[in-house]
Length: 165
Image (cartoon, rainbow, N blue to C red; front, side, top):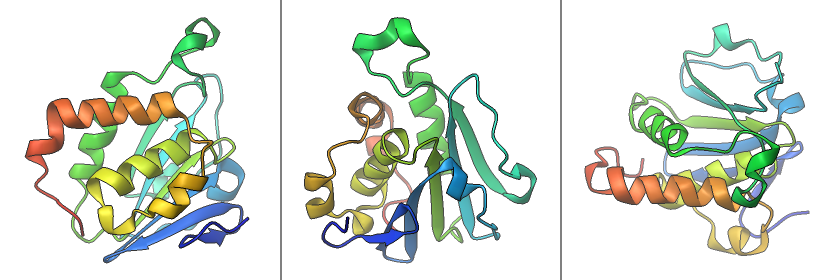
């Protein structure tokens, strides 16, 4: 399925903006990416799951562990919290200027990673944002996206030294 303006990259989605590319993938595909010093990894896993990404080769990486659930399902696992959103946003804002590729993965490469990719594109790297794609791609985790957006507005929006690349 190709949605206007994005490119399918294997089983993930790729967005290119000014000097930056953002991809979101399933775990099985992300495990095979060979990083370089211009790449950053946002790794999202279930709390009880380990993965086989060779993290030692990633100079810039963050790992978050939470379940792919919404607030109505909080008794079914660990929710994405404001503290996680804060940590993720700060990680991205602190990336060195040479980073030109952000790889995001979760288990299926659909909901959690999609929410993070949408947030980054809309609020931190708007040259990567593709309105048409996101109007059609409705399966991202809205609780993750809303939490990121709320923390962004409450704590970071006026302090973004980075702007778009």
